[in-house]
Image 1: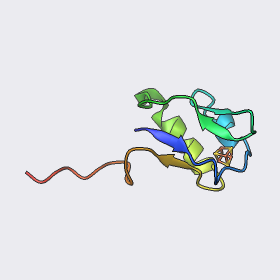
Image 2: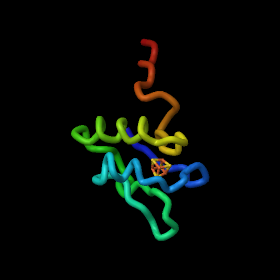
Image 3: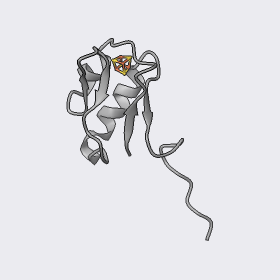
Length: 75
Ligand code: SF4
């Protein structure tokens, strides 16, 4: 999974950085940014999901699709 922070929705509360400091950090504007640009390591996925749940504005979104588990292609 990959995630991005929609800074238009972020209110800078810091919940995501508190929940998952390995992935999220506050930038110079006081808004969260995802410091991992690529695939989230498997061991951090749960922490990232917790951060998504903790975000009061839904600003953390999946970068590569609308669902966490894409449907398998039909054979
Ligand atoms: S939890 Fe959401 S609103 Fe709060 S800093 Fe993180 S992205 Fe922004």
